Amino acid sequence: MPDLPHRSISDRAYWREIVLLRHRLVSLKAQTRLLRHELARKYNPDQPRVPAGNADGGQWTSGGGGGGATPTGTDVPGDLGSAFSAALNFSDVVPDTSGEESWAFYQDATRPDGSLAERAVVNRDGSTIHSEFAEPDRKSDWDERHTVTSPEGGKTTFETSDRTQTIRDGGPDGEIVSRSTWTERGPEREATVQQVLAPPNPIGLLAAGAALFGWSSPNDGIDGQRTVMGFVPRDYQPGKPGQMDLTFVGNLTAEEAKNACHMLGKVQELTDRAANAAGDPRQFSSMATYGTDVHVRFKNFVNDLKDINFRAERSFLKEAAEPTSSEERAAGYPRSVRTDAYEYRPEDGTLCVYDLKAGRRGLSIPRSDILATAAYLGMSKVRRVILLEVRPRK
View 1 (tube, rainbow, N blue to C red):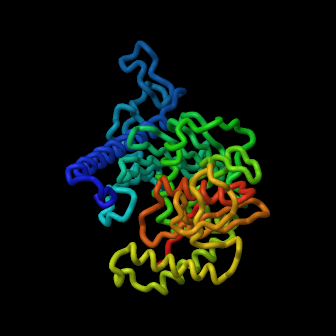
View 2 (view 1 turned 90 degrees about the horizontal axis):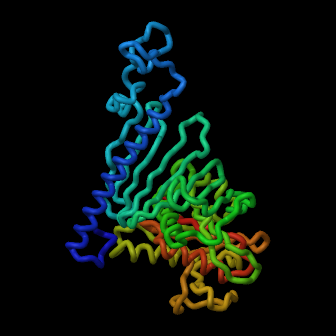
View 3 (view 1 turned 135 degrees about the vertical axis):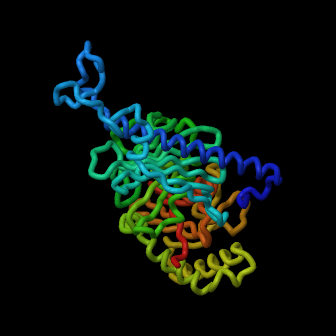
């Protein structure tokens, strides 16, 4: 497989089979869950039954007298086939044949009115994403929720209601790890929720967030949406290092994203200019070479602005144990990580980190954590870090 170059041919075949099996399992689970949901919605415990002593005693009745005929189709739990077909419509399985995406397959399920009900995604690493979307014009505790299952079976759910996101460890009914609301400045923890001292599995939480981010971000720009990852220091103390907690992963409107990260529009503009100046990617020996060319041109455009709070290609130390001064680090410095661009607002402590992508493949799990933590440690008085990917618009 393209993303597993270090594996032998037999290993690749093994993992390809694992992905196929996980895809089939996720698809079956999604269909079963939707069917159960539809049947539960139609079930009415107060619906009258035929009185005992009659030949059909105990069966459901319409209540119109005379025992009535048993309803058919979707109203009868026993008629699973009819209920299944009426409850939802499953699209064809969509595979990634390019090898450029982080996902291998996905499948959508829509309601009779055409609205999206659920989505099952299988990633190339064997993780899966099960997304659920609330019924339009129907009251629900959430607008959408996404449960990410790791290759090892761990589950993390990202449940969003309006602009408040609750993150749960263990699935939809799991322990609340975090609850934050997206504001004009970025994610803010909910003061009414007692945060756990530490996520039960911080690495698993980050991996789940990166998987969800990696699925959504390549589609940025469609319907004016922007995908963001938000991080907040666990115990904020000005000028002192601390651990970054993932608090928000999701889509915002372009306007909301720009309200939090003021230079987003400029970053997109300069990215487009750099890509246009680089020319057709097909004239380069590889996509990596093309990406390097775009990055170099982008850096020069940013540096021409001479804005000390808007920088490109700056390296930060990775480790919290290192000094946290704003001392510049040379590219390639040991234990350092380079940000493609960042925007820092000292007045409210917002740090926006922009990661440029010339292709479709999304942000890796380790890099997302390192970018957020290293950039935070390299600044003072950072109250939140917002991570975004930016791709050239075609």
